[in-house]
Each structure stands twice: as structure tokens, then as C-alpha cells.
Length: 353
Ligand code: KG4
Ligand code: ZN
Image 1 (tube, protein in one colour):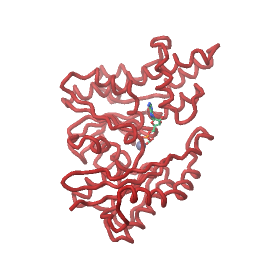
Image 2: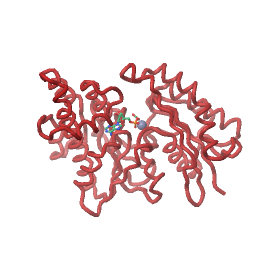
Image 3: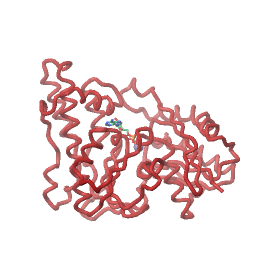
């Protein structure tokens, strides 16, 4: 009999619930995502407002997910919830709600790491998608290049030294007057921009030729500063915005794609996955594809499943539950929850960002 996993994601500014039906086949029975608009006014996520908005809407979002899946609360067989990393007050709402539901329904509870959720996103649309693969996780908060020989076995190749990839997109979007969050707006604007008009730096790209600890490391704050200088020097920003967006996106895409493709070839992987909000960027996806040979495959979830959603949390939770793992009632959200199963080589010190 199929088991219904009800999942919640509240780590940032999306309140999301989903029902994943797991049996001989897996089926996403419902997915509800409520994006909090209020943060646009402030040009970034305001943690307290995020927590309050989650609290106000999570009940209705949960009900809607159950209704769309055509089940009642009694049809829920397990609850999965993002336990971190993220904004702790936002996470608390999802964890307490999920915990309460699991406790009252007397079903298992599983706390899921947000980034492990992103890794599982392609499985929702491509059931055959599985390790081994090289993964590039690029979101508003993280930039991680990973080697994934098996589910649960994650080996860090590199991360960012400063800004996350999505954060860089968002900050540059603000500089160009495109509003928050701005990744998608930059991609749209870049389409009408001229390539090469702005030749921004490609940070740490040359490190690819060396065996050192920065071979697969990223750094985006210098690139952001280069765009800031160009904006300040511009006599007609309105006329040059598209060229700047194009120059910035080309630099980001070049570094991300080159390091990802190099890792796959160097380590002998024929499968690559791109995940997190920045993986919605088609220029990035196409560049990675073009850098790999014809027999390599690149898996990317659709945009709705790449950005934060509860379906990916259900998918990762289902994998843990299938191994007999579950969380205790003492499950606590953690802003800096360590990635379960992540190995960090000694040469790459510090917490991955
Ligand atoms: O994974 P996600 O929804 O949330 C986090 O876990 O952070 O990622 C959100 C990030 C934002 O920074 C947003 O600007 C970026 O993904 N993003 C994009 C695109 N769509 C969303 N960045 C570049 N190009 C896009 N098309
Ligand atoms: Zn995310």
C-alpha cells in the first residue's frame, strides 16, 4: 500500500506543504507554495516578518496540500520537515507544526536538511535519477560543489568563500534596480544585453589549473564590487543595464559551469545535477551541458521544484524513512544544521557556505 508523506518547508520566505505518495511508484500528490511578498518592500528577507507570515499561513497551506492530494489527516503516514539550515524563527514554525501533526496522528517524524532536499528535487520528475553524480547546489544561501557516489554519501569539493551564488545575483539585481529577489530578472534582462561589452572578472577560475584547495572554491564578492564600480562609472545606467546584466551573468555562469564540468570529468562522473534557485538559470544549464561530452547527462528539476518547496523535503524524507530512520520528539531546528553524511576534506577547512 502506498504511504503518504506530508512535508513542510519553512526555512526562508516560502511556506510550503506537499504530499508525496510512496509505493511501487512515487507520485507527487500535491504541492502548495506560498511565497511571502512582504520582503520585496525591504529588499531582502526580514526574519521576524518571515516567521509571522509562516505562522499565519501554515495551517491553510497544510489543509490545501491535503485537499489537493485528496486525503484527510488520517491518510498521512509520516511527516517530513526542514530542520535547517535557514532562519531559525522560520524553521521553528514548520518544525513545531510538523511535530504536532506527527504526534497527534501517531506517525513517524523526520527532520530533513534543506540542501539534501535540493539534491533530491530531480527525482520527483525523473524517477530514474540517482547517484553517482556531481552536484552543484546554488541557492540564495549556499554554493556547494559535491561528489555524490550514493545517497547519504556527500563529499565536499568546494564552496564559496563569501557570497552565495544566488546572493550575488540578488545583490547585483539591486544595484541594477531590478528589485528583490533578482536572479530571474537578471536572466531576463541579460537576454537583450551584449556579450563582451562588460568583461567582469571570473573569480578563482584560474585555480582550476592547480591542485590546491581552491580548485573548486568560489568567491563572488569581488565580482559584485566590479559591477558596483561599473554602475557608478556609468553615464547612462538605463541604457547599459542589460549589457551589465549580461556581463555579470556570463562571468557567474562561466565560473560555476567550468568548475562543475571539470569536477565531473576529473573524477570520472557521467552524471551532473544542478539544484537550488540559481539552477533555474537556463544560461547556466546550457553552459554546463555544452562543456560536457555527449554521453554525460545533466539533471535539473523544473523551476518550481528548484526553488524552495516541500516536495523535495518529502523526497529526501522518504529516503531516510525507507532506511528506518526517523527523528525524536526532541527535534529542534538549527540555523546551521550540519549536512548529514557530508565529508569535508582536511584541506577544505571551515563550515561550507
Ligand atoms: O533555493 P532557493 O529558492 O532559496 C534558497 O534556499 O536560498 O534560491 C533562491 C535564489 C535567489 O537568490 C534567486 O535570485 C535565485 O535563486 N534565482 C536565480 C534564478 N531564479 C532564482 N538566479 C539566477 N537565475 C535565475 N533564473
Ligand atoms: Zn533552498
